[in-house]
Structure formats: structure tokens, C-alpha cells
Length: 145
Image 1: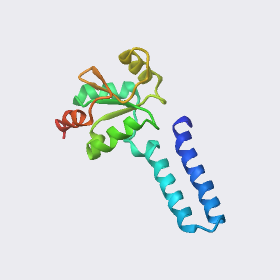
Image 2: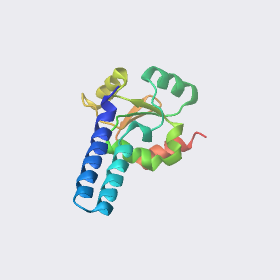
Image 3: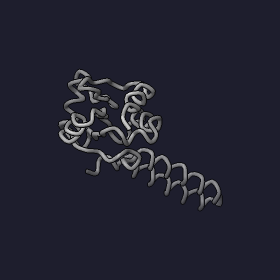
Image 4: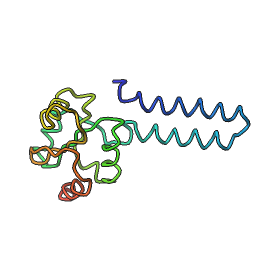
């Protein structure tokens, strides 16, 4: 449960410590800028940026009902963040499975990638696509309103 929050917490903590050091050194503008940048990094690498994750069983059930793709991801993954940002509002149309919270989801990813936990991995019609082009995923999600 805490694993997805380790990297964001480290960003926030280092931002606070760095800002305190810069302020103590007499540079409040740099302290504020440093704190804001690291706070933004903390938010960007947190689970807050992604749509609410569901378990593999629920994602498969929903995907079978509506045909929407399933995206396997993990917090802190820059490629997952890139996919999420490029999907924009369409990201909410997909079913997201956090492989750090769902061991069954991690097993599906390992099976698709030859033993690695390479994310994002996207299941479209039951077929896995490892680290697909965000434009392609956007096209797949455009079919669903």
C-alpha cells in the first residue's frame, strides 16, 4: 500500500529540505521555486495523476462488457506517466491496473513480456501490447465514448 508513495514522498521531502536550506541561505525566491518544482514532481509520480486503479479481475470483467482496453501501470514509471499525459481526458475511458497493488496484474505483464514487469502494457481485445505508442492507444480509446 505504501510502495506507490515512496518516490513522491522522497520528492516532497527533498523539496522541503532544499527549500529550507535555500531560505536559510537567504534566497527565498529560489527556495520557493525549488519547493514548487519538487512538489510538482511528487504529484506527477504519485497515483493521484492516474485514474482510479482496479484489480485485474474487475478490469477484465469491465473490458469484456464494454470492450475498452486495460492498461497495466505502476507509480513512478515515466513511460506510464507519458502515456497518461498524452491520453489526456481519454485516460478515464480505459481500465487501469496498478501492478504494484495487484499481483495477478503483475503476473499478466510478466507473461506478456517474457518475465519482466515492463509497463505500460495495454491489453486490447485480450492481446498485450508492451509500451505502445500513445497515439495508437489514443486511437484505440477513441472508439469508446
